[in-house]
Length: 387
Image 1 (cartoon, one colour):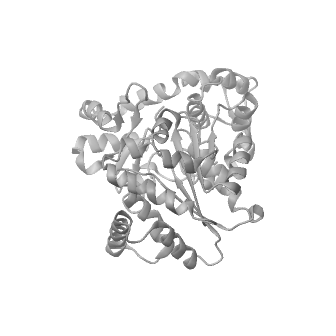
Image 2: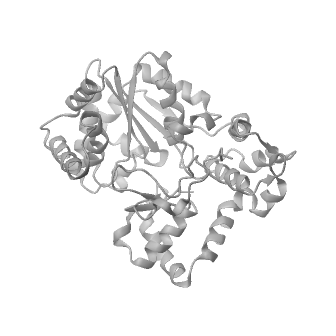
Image 3: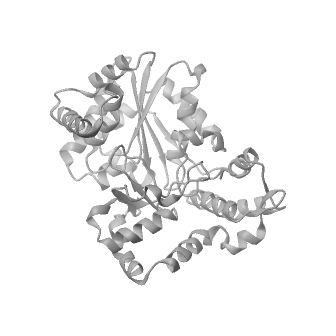
C-alpha cells in the first residue's frame, strides 16, 4: 500500500495527486505567472513554499489548458549558484551529454555566465530551440536564502542575480523565475533595489492553512488509498496542529508515522492508540529521533554533536537557524555511518553529485524500495527539514 503522506519531505510534481489544501494560493500564483516573469513565494520555515510551487503550481501550468507549453527546471543555489544554474539549464540544450563531458560543459557554462560571455537569455533561447513545441521555461530557485547562507562569493552571488534580472526583464521574455524564500530572509531582497523594482507586486505570501484546508490535507490523500481514521482522530490532529505554520511539517511527519503504525485488518486504519504511542503531534519527531538514536552504536552517538554542528548554521539576531549541507567525504567513517543510518530513517537527506537528486530520507511511492540502497552513492547530507 502506498503511503500518501510526505513526512518531512516537500511534495514533488509527481506527488501532485496527494497534495491537498492549497488551492487558494495556487490560484494566486497561476494568476501572477500570467503577468509577471519574476515572482517570490515567501513564507515561514515549514509553511510549505516548496510544495506549493513543485506540487501545486507546476502541475497546473503543465495542463494543456494553461495557455502555454512549459519546461520546468528547479535548482537550489548552494555555494556556487552559477554552477547550480548551469547544471539545470545545460540538459535542456545538450541532453545527450554525460560523464566527464557533462561536468566540463557545466563548468564552461558557469564560467561563461560569470564572465557575461553568454547571457542566460541566450541559453534559454537555445533551450527552446532544442525543445520543439515548448513555449516557455520556468526556473524555480528554491531556498533562495542559500544565496546568503551558503554562497560566500559575493561577486558570483551578484552575477547570478543580475543574470536572472536581465533574462526576465526582456520584453516578451520566454523565461519566468520563481524564488522561494523564508520570510526572515526577505530583508536581504529588500537590500537589492533593482531586484525589488523588478519584482514589483510579484510577491506571493504563504499564509498558515485554515482549519478546513488542513483537514483537506489530512483526509484528501487518505481517500486515494482507501485509508480510514478512527472516529475523532482527525479533529484531534487539527486541534493539536492549530494555526502555527511550523506545525505543517510536523503534521505531515505525524501522519506518515501513523500510516506506518496503522492497523492492517480488513480496513487500513489510523488509530488513537498509535497517535498516543508516538507522542502526538508535538512529540512525534522527538519520539522517532530518540528511537533511531537508541539503535546507534556508542561511537556513532558520539559523532552526532559534531555532525549536526556541520548541518546547522546559527542565525543572526533577526534570523532563525538554517540548515546547511556537509560533504560526506569530509566526514570521518563513523560520522558517515551515522549519517547513513539517520538518512535511512528520513531524518537526513543525502544528495548525489550527478544531478542533485535527493535520495535517502525521501519516502518513494514504490512500497518495495529499501531506503539504504542509494545512500552510499550520495555525496552531501543535510537535515530533512529545519523543524
